[in-house]
Length: 171
Ligand SMILES: Nc1nc2c(ncn2[C@@H]2O[C@H](COP(=O)(O)OP(=O)(O)OP(=O)(O)O)[C@@H](O)[C@H]2O)c(=O)[nH]1
Image: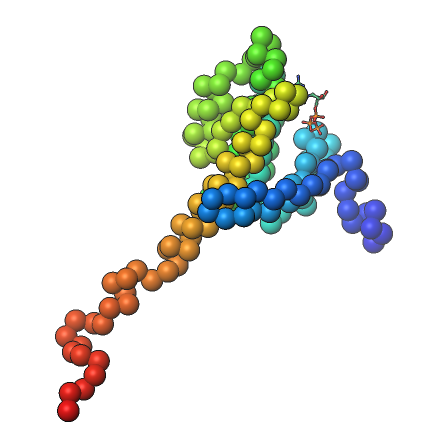
C-alpha cells in the first residue's frame, strides 16, 4: 500500500500544537482541523481516533451546520465511550449576529442534553477563540483529577482492620 493510499489526502486536515499553562497543570494540545465536508466522512475517524477532546464547530447563521454538527456527534458517539472524550459544541460567526439562525439557547440546550461544553465564538474577530481551548483543557485536567481520585484508595481503606490490635508487640 502506498502512503497515498494509507493516508487521507492532505487537504482533509490541518495540524498545530498549542501549550496552555493553566493553574492546575500545563496542557499541550495537538490540534487537528478535519474537513467537515460529507465526502471526507469515511476517513475523518482516522484523525479523531485516540483523541482526548473534540470541538464541533457550527455556523450560527446556518441551521444546517448545526444539524451536521449533530451528525458528527453521532460519529463520535460510535467511536468513544460516554465521557471518554471532552466534546465542545462551538457556535461560530458571532460577528454576523444579524444573520443568526441558531439562537444561543438552542445551542446551549442541545449541548446540555448531550453533556457537551458550549461556547460561541467569532474566528473573524477573535472572540472567545482562546477561551474555547482553555475551557476544553480545564475540563480535561478536571476529569483527569476525578479519575485519579477514584483510583486512589480512600483513607479508610488504608486503616487497620478493626480489632487487629497494635502493629508493634509490647515486651
Ligand atoms: N464572518 C465570519 N466568517 C467566518 C468566521 N469563521 C470562518 N469564516 C468564514 O467561513 C468560511 C468557511 O470557513 P472555514 O474555516 O473554511 O470553515 P470549515 O468549517 O473549516 O470548512 P471545512 O474545512 O470545509 O469543514 C470562510 O469563508 C471563512 O472566512 C467567522 O467567525 N466570521
